[in-house]
Amino acid sequence: MQAPVLVLKDSLKRESGSKVQHANIQASKAVADIIRTTLGPRSMLKMLLDAGGGIVVTNDGNAILRELDLAHPAAKSMIELSRTQDEEVGDGTTSVIVLAGEMLHVAEAFIDKSYHPTVICRAYNKALEDAIAVLDKIAMSIDVKDRSTVLGLVKSCIGTKFTSQFGDLIADLAIDATMTVGVDLGQGLREVDIKKYIKVEKVPGGQLEDSKVLKGVMINKDVIAPGKMRRKIVNPRIILLDCPLEYKKGENQTNAELVKEEDWGVLLKMEEEYIESICMQILKFKPDLVITEKGLSDLACHYLSKAGVSAIRRLRKTDNNRIAKACGAVIVNRPDELQESDVGTGAGLFEVKKIGDEFFAFIVDCKDPKACTVLLRGPSKDLLNEVERNLQDAMCVARNIIKNPKLVPGGGATELTVSATLKQKSSSIEGIEKWPYEAAAVAFEAIPRTLAQNCGVNVIRTMTALQGKHANGENAWMGIDGNTGAITDMKERKIWDAYNVKAQTFKTAIEAACMLLRIDDIVSGIKKKQAPGAGQAPSKPKIEEEGDADNEQILPE
Image 1 (cartoon, rainbow, N blue to C red):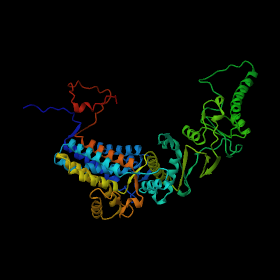
Image 2 (image 1 turned 30 degrees about the horizontal axis):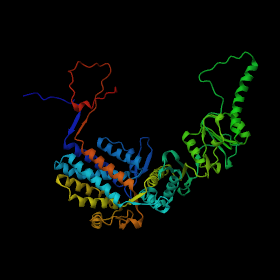
Image 3 (image 1 turned 90 degrees about the vertical axis):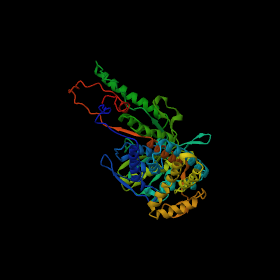
């Protein structure tokens, strides 16, 4: 009899076949269970210790998963899901995980019956197509200009978050901010760049009710010479520079040999004249405020303050861009290239205020600003961080609705409608794919079920009643009111979701479930590092198998 052949090294662990799929499903379900209780208005918060020892208190699915450190590869890929969702549409991070976990859970039964994973995937993809078709059918368009509708939408998005107890506050902030920075691209398209043009400044202290959206920009800098320069200017003319207002130093060490003593004076005078000429070029335009990203020497400061011009130095580039957007100035790289058109006159007021224990410069009351700052106040750091995360979600929803003004019902109503329609369709599907297709339909019910669980109502009764209402795909608007757990009409309660958030949620969840089901082999193991100097004993030539070719690290470690 032949000796057994060793292909993989001893240190490598290899699992294959259905064992892997079970492990993956288990892992994904574990991740989904962590997140499950944070869905809906009655959601719990999670408290995490992050790497730096700080505390994160949140119920934003993505923020929780970001902080988790997981060992299982399948669980890691689940975390990627909520990241994608967060980057793409900004909301629905929790639903994605719950849905994907459920999809895998229902697939488990089929794998036990030794269905082939690709069959299950094919059925799932079919279900996905039909689900998106149903979404299209029940979606209703709205008018972005109608503030109350948008407010209702954003509110139902934040209703599940911690800040929902402050009513419309955060929703108003988010809508104001996104409406401000929206840029029309023509052809009815609108581009809203939240990251670039909306700055969120968190200042501990005060009450949350003091938070507001500034019609302009706020930066945490003071003017250079507080005593001499004006701290409040009405209708300022603003010049933004990207160059230092100080004498240019040599690139590398410069030695100047001076023969006569007077030359030293001449040298100093040249520096002074250089700075003076720069300042004069700027003062020609009669600005009231000069802001530069680089340094500004004492001498230049003197010239400017003598002319009654306030100056701010060393500003962040991003802030400078925001100010430019807000007051209509152009950032200039060289003072000699200044033109009248570069001066920003859009701002109504410049003033420096002390908030807490820091000075902040406000450039506010702008005419038609294209950038803005959201000022958040609140009792503690943790609370502010959570409010900021919620605001981020709210602004994303507002952005989505501006880009694609279509709504679907919230409160699990959409998922139930999709589920009911898919159940009907499953009877017309031929062959073996019918069963996984039907299971996918059932999996969609995970969302309303979780909502009901989190409200603490009788889950089975509520779900049966809801399924009865949705039985043949009608009453698309019946769902669960997340606060009371009662079955209500979502249209009356104004509980909405944005169409593209829902569509993205479904797509991400199902595609991820398919990907994890398709994995049938996990080879894990660490290559042992050898101690330097302990040269390898001449070993037998190693024969590489496909399985371990992928594991070779090509880069030197």
